[in-house]
Image 1 (spheres, rainbow, N blue to C red):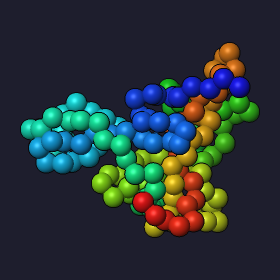
Image 2: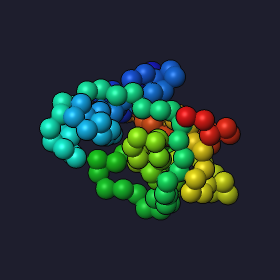
Image 3: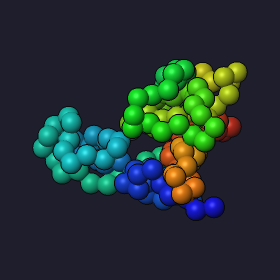
Length: 139
């Protein structure tokens, strides 16, 4: 099956998955996704910064209704999913959470993964990032 990333600028690598944010040279603030100027000091240059692959659920909710465009539902139609913020130590990342409802909780150790976001008209699988349960919680 042919696949592609939903946005290549979000990723340092796919196998294994690694996300790339940016770090300010002036105040060391880390952001995700990358941006051209620091939201904290507006002084330093922003450079690519590879993020940790493991963190902890900081907050979460159930995305119970289909989001507005540009969201594209997966093959088979929309199904509710968990979404939340993952604390990676330097930055909070908003992401899909591939965690069963019975297990999800604030503070849960999670690890970066990729999931199918949708399929293009030609059948190409489009991948995005998400976090799944991480048994050991290491960073």
